[in-house]
Image 1 (cartoon, helix red, strand yellow):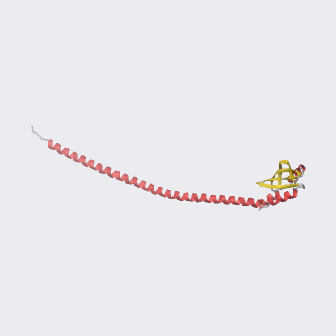
Image 2 (cartoon, rainbow, N blue to C red; image 1 turned 90 degrees about the vertical axis):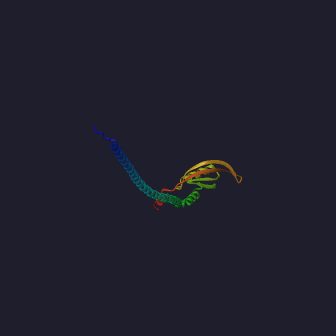
Length: 190
């Protein structure tokens, strides 16, 4: 029988397999590194592009915020101008109102009544004065109710008082101011 020593051959095969394993392992490590670098580069590119888009959006948002602030400021100015315009229109429409009211008071004031004060708060006038008798106060109220500018006279109080050693009635009367219909229509047409 011939004896063959297969040990060196096996050892050679093992070395070849080991080298092949190291080579394949090295290639796998290199391939893994290449794939990792490639994935990192691609994802980094996506992130960088998205950050550039975000910067563009931030710049646009800042620009729009400035425009919104400008619009708010303009709206506030418009509201202030509209409020001024309304005040001016109200003054314009009511500029002759005081003249009409005082004229009506003078025309409709019966004898024996003396006004101590005339006070206006909005569309309401308060008259405080003295009358020789209570019937003159009621005559004044009827007369004021007939006026086209003065409506709804209401007696607040009447009390006895002494003025220059004479017994008189002190009264407080409330009246509403109202524009006649014909004047409202002409005021609206202007």
